[in-house]
Length: 454
Ligand SMILES: [Cu+2]
Figure 1 (cartoon, rainbow, N blue to C red):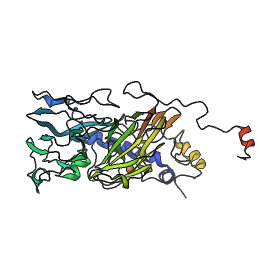
Figure 2 (cartoon, helix red, strand yellow):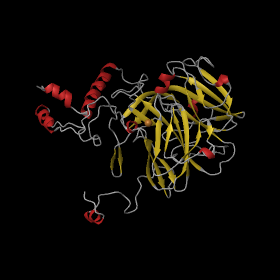
Figure 3 (cartoon, protein in one colour):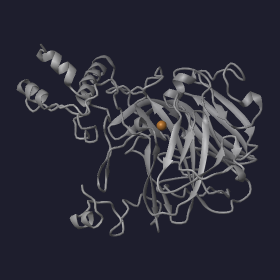
Figure 4 (tube, rainbow, N blue to C red):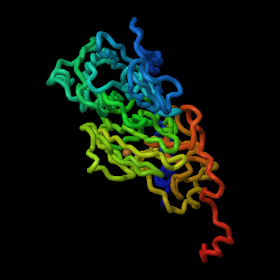
């Protein structure tokens, strides 16, 4: 004999279970957590210092980035991010990095209490040229010590940033100075080497691009994307640094789709995407639609031409950079995403019964007697759960609005928009397909013509 409670417990499907737990979690958070601190004011170039720092990029930066005074390179564009300003002093490029707590929006509806650099996660892109002398000041505004490791950069041992091994940790409130010459061009990363598990899990990661001294043969649309993964319990704001599996928020540049800014290119453009991964545990097979690319570079240097091969998916391991290049030769809106299906979901819960294929009609009728309007969800799949009410500060099951309805992916997903011509640098909107080029329902005549019995 199944009583009402047992029936409810055993038959409520995925989404309902997620929601119940989420609401509980949200309530607990509200009861037991102090109100989150007000957001720190967005940090501008120079961090309030008296010096004038040069800001390489500004609004409307999707494609080009603004050129930097006195520099020959075409700046890299960091979608949803920006580049760290610098100032030249006696032939040295001076940067000021501030390690600090950051209030961050993963996507509309989910705000988190992260740790990052200069008011953001990932930290701003550090960009310079091969042979540049760099002086990087790091101010620690975290509640614990930190350090900065320059991942992939060839430098004197004492500048390597490994607390305990090559330097003392930077105490709370103190500013350390790193000084070295960027000996080789390439794509690198930066992150703490003190309490790595906590600080990286909370968002303290960043990318470094060192341009070659020689002028590039061809202008490139140059993008920087950092993959990351987070465990953010539904209803809470603080990512859980103890998570080792079951990450529920997957991001490019700390944004989950639909919060990710698209990448854009004009037909015939050479496109470079610099992918970094400093997530805690997972490697990401990143897949591009509509094009083939070559991996041209890692954080170890250029891949020799003889070793390059065409591909559509590149595995980006934890602690690695993979740079891909391709010519944008197909107009359209092309998905660019991690191919792990759980990495294109937003705050998906996993500890739920599998209802797919279950005949829930009898259950619905019986539960409906005590819960009017009750409907078990998940029996035909989970593709249409976007309309559910969500607990506060969560993006479970949130997808994006597309030109043909809901895009039911979230997480580590963005869009490459290729157009014959772009008007400026901003998002060109949805692709307008030429007549007759969109998949649609087959007509009776077509089915008969080709002998298809549906
Ligand atoms: Cu992934």
